[in-house]
Image 1 (spheres, rainbow, N blue to C red):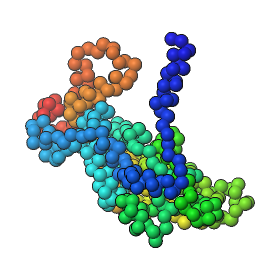
Image 2 (image 1 turned 90 degrees about the horizontal axis):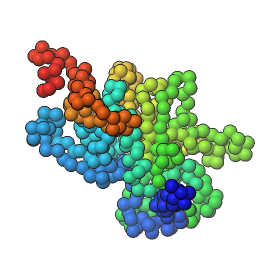
Image 3 (image 1 turned 180 degrees about the vertical axis):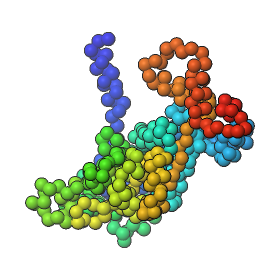
Image 4 (image 1 turned 60 degrees about the vertical axis):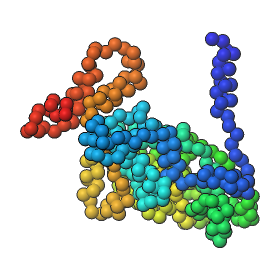
Length: 389
């Protein structure tokens, strides 16, 4: 292969990836919204559509194959999850029901989704898959240029005009300007919000655009600045403490605004550390560092933990406020033999053993052993018979 061939590959990739992104004033953005009102979405709706738009099938729960497995419940199989997750139809169905209700602004839009289950059940993998859906399948979104939380440009509209603009544009406007954009609007644009620049961007975890991850932290290193950002000490010599220009909004809730905030092993953190999560769900606002007003937050809060941590957290009566805002989905081990075998095949295909010879029935026997190890002893029959049933 020659150097020119490499250059052709690079050029073709850049050409395919390069797409003209919107740049203009707020007035230009209003014209765009008038033509495409569906471009204005809250976080839950955007995430739901990015997964559901790829297709789904409703399983026939009256058939013999599915009646016993799903207890007669109506189950949807989403194409997005089919290639990666096996035997988790009930879990993904509950996840999507949560997102659908939240997309319609039900009570779920003010709750934290918690995936709870044993080690190795696939909680982290499922959350990673959901984040990839937002990165790869969601439409780009529009934000105010220079805004650290990349907020919705319609926040510029004053409250007195919002009802009229909602009628004209056919959208619902929710939320308020952050202190930094408000300061810029008054001082740079003299209150003329129609001149405020608007840009288009996509979601990226590595780029810290719309997807944020909060790892578990020990009690000594916990700091709410990880969640809400800090004050830039170097600017406190220039501006007073309540000036928005001293804010450095780089916390998880700032980064994950309009997208996803993931809490890894959420209950390993101290309860005081989770109070910000409470305000983000109940009031859709998070504190700003220093003496500024609270910031509007629009995002999906995903978390996961194992069963022992959940039971320990639930036993503390002082945690009732957070427990009330948590919607728990249990992620159990797979108990279906054919689905367990598909998981092993997927793991092998992703490894360097792909294509290697494996003795007949090896994967089936290994799957049988795994499923049997997850079953409880019964007086009615032995484990092997129970596994076959």
